[in-house]
Image (tube, rainbow, N blue to C red; front, side):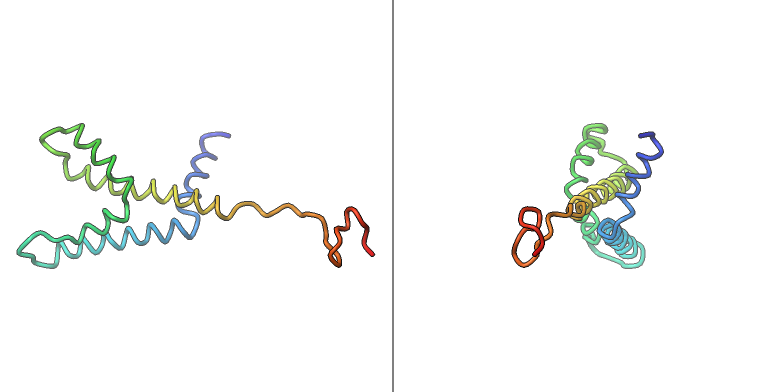
Length: 127
């Protein structure tokens, strides 16, 4: 299996099934909600509109945030890293949902013996 077909398979799992697409749509909607709230709504205190995007990308986002804290230490990770971790976590979760969807769909069952009148025709014939 070459690299191109592997990438196509990963892309199909991430974007090519309804479960992953609905999930990614929810993440995009949460991010747009947070952006609209941040730009157009005035708040006296901090807004918690972005928490929905974080909750939708959990639990994958938390190890990525911890890695950022380990890289930058006390200075804290830059803003671009927070946005990047949100996108990476959403894509990883979509891939995992695609794998679960494929696993639950499964393969069609193999055709078993034909049952006619309560008797298995393999052993008793079709009478």
